[in-house]
Length: 110
Image (cartoon, rainbow, N blue to C red; front, side):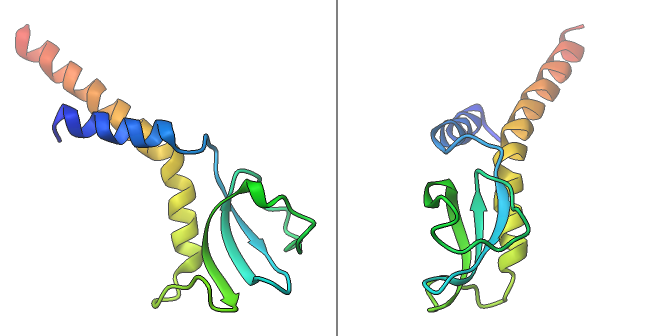
C-alpha cells in the first residue's frame, strides 16, 4: 500500500465521527427492529424513540419495517459489528503499517 493511500485512509478516518462506535438494537413504531451503529453503547433495552437520541446514530444496517434498510444476506448484525470495529481498527492498522515500514527501513540501513 502506497503512502498516499494510507494518507487518504487517515483523512477519511479523521473526517468521520469520533469513536468509539457501538452496535445498538432499537425498536419503535417508525423503525421496527433497528440495528444501528452508534456513539453510545447499547443498553440492552431496545429503546423506542424518543427514548434515544437520534444524533448518536452513525449508520443503520437494518430497519425491518418499513423496509428502509436491509441486506439481502441478512447479515445486518455482522455488518454493524464490522462498521463499529473498523472505526477503531483502521487507524491502528495504518499506524502499524507505518511502524513496520520504519522497522524494515531501519534494518535495511543497518
